[in-house]
Length: 350
Image (cartoon, rainbow, N blue to C red; front, side, top):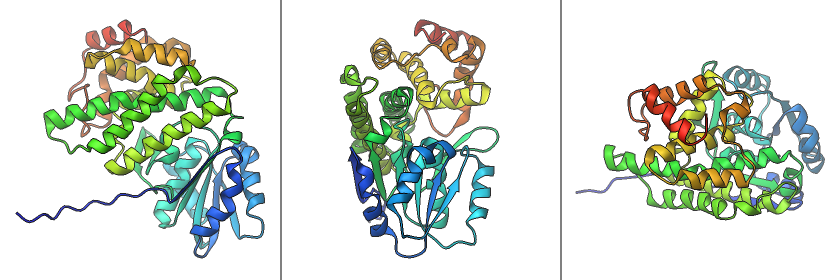
């Protein structure tokens, strides 16, 4: 039988992570800019934190600064209209999750290189080829540009509130249940599975679980550790060609919360709660996860984020609907209120 399988995998060509990594932004940009204008996607706060410094490093080069708000389809449309008359040669996303997502999607649509310059290690999107864009009803995980380069300055990232770092660590830690879901989908549904991607994803999770005690406020070394594993998680997704290694039932729960009412919870905090429930449903060691999140200072109690018991129960019950083609421990039909309540109650989420 003739073998005709083909698969494309895209990885960053340059990765600079550490103290004063920003000093490399000009060289990296010039290396990957063939012609045209540099588009810098940032926000009002993140521009002050790092955008201005990036612009200073690019002095003398032709650039355009695009100030973006939340990553929504409407905002994306307006942004692309704003730069439609400019010959963009490369995009640099400077900021947290939404600015990186906007930059990645714009670069993908324009078919130009993308440089990720995160200001906080708040989630694994800084190193993945997926973008989370809100369409008015829910957050869609859509194909975007894999960063051609990542410049992660831990000195700058350490200035962000510790909550961002803890949330980013939680996002990667939750990979452990994503991989469990993926293995189950492979076993039950015959879904394609990459052992390499799964091993890397689980490794990134285990590294943070085992070193949770070293993740503390005010430590640049903590930012270094979290960011390294975020990059590993992004590599796993690049190998898999999808977000499967890092997005399972725990992310479906998070997306359901975003629709029903996630209070003031950040993405990483949402998936931390979701991973506890998922681990319980898998029959795994959810107490280990609970202790890990507690060590790094992340609450897994819905009420701490202003999320009611009713919303949390409903979110777990309907979470499978958010991505029905992605088989997880949540199954293919709504969980009963009784099962959802029990899972959330026993794990301390409600």
